[in-house]
Length: 299
Image (cartoon, rainbow, N blue to C red; front, top):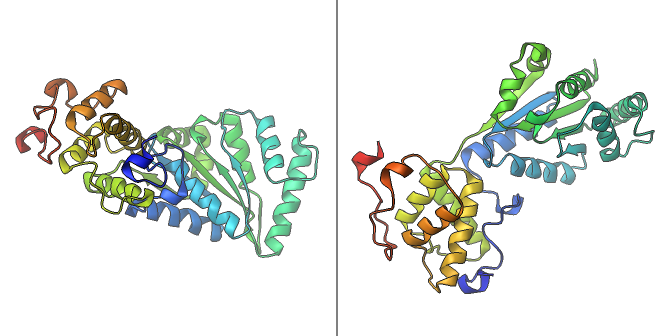
């Protein structure tokens, strides 16, 4: 709706994961490099964790794009609320196994045949599970057993990537999953953005969308966006998208603190210090870069 007003070619703050808008922060670069390295080196189990909205699914989308470009066979399980029967059925569908998809025995035989065939051709096969913190205990045990598919000469036949919220780490610490935990060779973790990273993130998305010199968000507004989003990329996207819409409706080229207050109220956002500070002391019409609090109040 606001793209033409600001001169964007496309929406800069789409909430759907889009590898084209990937901001390659050091931690995201490291996470993606670890995922690719783990797959190529046949490490077996790789775990990616992070708080809600920190970019785990985007990392998996980037990994999937890479696997497709390298013609690597993979299964991507995006719905983890499944039982063991559904788990094997989804693997069979994703890998197009020639067998009865509802028979665990036939799926295992067909999967083993595919894995050996791929390995003999110098290729590997990957199982990616998003939202893995929701997996039932018996499904996690089946995944552990799939990790046992290996060959003395060819190594691990199936590379397994588990991505989830921090609850996944706590789940893997459970005594009954210690065998699975011992098999995890690589762990990656995504943290919320620092202020500097958040500024670079927002500016990179604005530039990719068609604004060479980002000027919509002043330094002060960006500082508040980072505080109120707590550095979570998904929340930053949602706040910025709503701010652009609000500015468009007001026919303003810059977002103001008053607009930010309105957006945050509509989104029912909570952030550290909100109740103590109340509304910002900056004038509602101000869009200058002054911080909303003194250095002493920050700590």
